[in-house]
Length: 149
Image 1 (tube, one colour):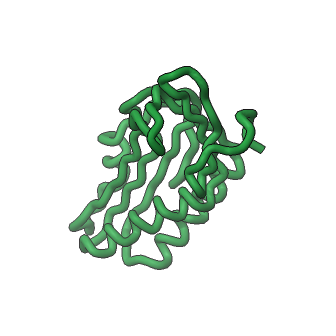
Image 2 (image 1 turned 45 degrees about the vertical axis):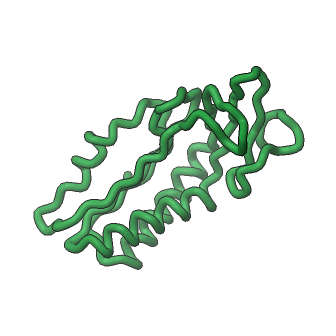
């Protein structure tokens, strides 16, 4: 499996080891961390939900597209679901290739496509108490604060 949804903490060092290849001259990785703010609001934590089967299948398609489009040797990705605290790694993408250009391009392609296409919902918990679901595409809070649809 080259893409997965997990409830476990993401270990970037262990994930990077999955990219090892004797022909690789470059490795590009991306780590998305939980930060303490968004749109002027102080954030205390995030909560992610996903339809795991659909999200995993779409993530696999994106990884497959990157392998076809770019001259890369290996590509992987993982997104965490559940309750995450400030500083936790929420998403990791890694690519190995013979040359840096292909590694950078494929890594950017994968994270950009994951953010646009994979059905993962984010709930922000604010420092002042309330919380709200965030639209993955616009980054704006949804009109109601109920569970994602």
